[in-house]
Structures are given as C-alpha cells and as structure tokens.
Image (tube, rainbow, N blue to C red; front, top):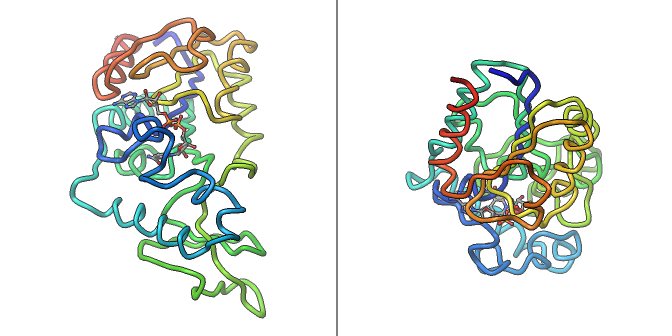
Length: 234
Ligand code: NAD
C-alpha cells in the first residue's frame, strides 16, 4: 500500500444501509424532530424529557435485530487490521457500528449513544438502557443530573487536538457518507489538503465540499468503500 498514515472521517451515510437514518434523508430532521429541539443545549433546557426520550429511542434502536454493521464498516475494520495505528477512524456518528464491525482506533467526535455524562463534572458512564433526569451521577456530592454523552450543536467536539494533529500528518484523507454541512468536520479536507495528503470523497452524491477532494466515488457506501480500499491495498 502507498499510504502509511490514513485518516478516515465517517458520517451518517455510512450507517444508512445499516438501518439508521441520516439527516439529509429526512429533510434536515432527525427522526422527525428538529435539530433545535433534540440536538442543542437550549433544546435540552427547554424540554429535557423530550431529549431523554429521543436518545433513549436511538439507543434502543442499536439493540434491534434490524441494525448491524454493513460492508463499509467491515472494510474499515479490515484496513485497521492491516495497518494498525496507521489508521485513525474519526466518526461523527453516535452509533456503535464501527466497533461492532471490529474497529478499535475510533474517535467519536460527537459522542456516543451508549454513554451518559454528568452535567457538572463531565464524567461519563456506559449505559445500554433508558435513562432520564432521575438518574443521579455518582461522581459528585450532592449528586447531579446525567445527560446523553452527545455533542450538540454549539458545543465543542471531542478529541479535536488529536484529530487536527493526525490530519496534519496524514498522507491519505478519506471522507465517507457525510454531507459536509456540519463544522468542524466539514473543514477537515482543507486541513488535509494543506498537509499535502491525497483526499478522497466516498458518498452517495457530491457533498457541499466535493470540489475540495482530489478524487471522488459516488454510490452506496457498502459498495464503494470496500472497492476503494481494495484498490489501494492491491
Ligand atoms: P448528514 O445526514 O448530514 O449527511 C449524510 C450524507 O450521507 C449525505 O451526503 C448523503 O448523501 C450520504 N449518504 C446517504 N446514504 C448513503 C449511503 N448508503 N452510502 C453513502 N453515502 C450515503 O450526516 P453527517 O454529515 O454525518 O452530519 C450530520 C450529523 O448527524 C452528525 O453530526 C452526526 O452526529 C449526526 N447523526 C448521526 C447518525 C448516526 O450516528 N448514525 C445518524 C444521523 C445523524
């Protein structure tokens, strides 16, 4: 393989064929809710129960038999097996499909569904079932409320320093299944280009930033992702 330091960015499109809806497929709504209501700190202040219910439903969906990793998730796990720490997988997704496919070096920049976080200390715990404001944290005295460990619009994504460093040093940057509308992820390709990396977009259709990529393949992630990685490893 010609590349030694690869950064892959994934978005909701890689999980679309696994039974999890994207934003774009639903006219900017996330499972029939506005982003303002379920993905902002203000929405949580306004109506916490709606937000708990929304993420409880998304978390429960991960346990359903209809949701499982697809060939694109498996292709990325295989690449990691081949090159180990030479691949950093950065995902905007809050689902657990990369891990279920076998990927280990994953950074969930927007958090994960299966974690709850103390609203004061920021300490997170794993959680697979439902929870709401009745769940107390065990890290503070007196204890505080827990919230979904999801990065909402207006909040700072996780791992930004590590991600920026990896992109600034990568020789291949691949963006998969993301519309290029949500920053800072949408700005990663510019950083990769400045670093001299080869940049590739794999998406169902051209994204907002498609012109910034040196190479593009449009189609279903389950088809174009394994095909692309086959071509660079053979
Ligand atoms: P997005 O919904 O804005 O865009 C998804 C992109 O994927 C679109 O460009 C679409 O054309 C493409 N796409 C759809 N089906 C595809 C397929 N089968 N193969 C390849 N591409 C396909 O998603 P985004 O850019 O990730 O940004 C939205 C935000 O939504 C993220 O911050 C993320 O946290 C959140 N979100 C996450 C999930 C999840 O965890 N699975 C689901 C919905 C939204």
